Length: 262
Image 1 (cartoon, rainbow, N blue to C red):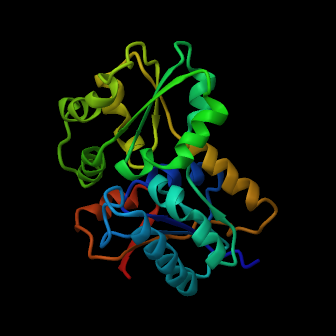
Image 2 (image 1 turned 180 degrees about the horizontal axis):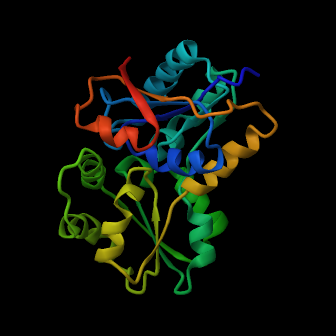
């Protein structure tokens, strides 16, 4: 294994940075390529057929260009729809992102859990299966919010996002029929941990759970024993449409020093 072979992270936008962050903590010198399908953003409102075709094709191009040791689909929507297609198309390990319903059920005392994701994610049968397998004794309430994805992108770009903006976007989940007593909320979109402070301020009695740390541990496990550079090289961010220039400083905070357009 070439020590310079990167880990490839893929998302529709900047949400996957919430997975990259804990991965950098565990693997501080890992070379990183972060790819955002900004031309296809947002994924949550697209059809399953479109994403099942688009995501494997894009990842195939990225793998040919950057020769990663492992790919991470750091997007719940893309994972729940296209993960099997991607694994069939690529000859490297592929890590997906799924809603953290199991840890939420382990944490909940009231047995009422909220799942906040995109419209595409929350309607997937995969979420039904997770709820049946790990939260059968819980009431699992779901809400898909395209607005929260936009708010997360705005926040990372440095635009103001208020607690009230976030409260209004999350309210349909917290105020749904049967939601009284909800004590745990699954952030089932990688964009949403970027707004964790605002969600916590709006709903301080609800614990927030996301899969970022678990995915980072999985990446570390799959790459155990592999060689890494002695020092962290500069990371590369790749966009499928030109990003806003203001994003450069935010990306640099995650070690992504070079920005390219695919």
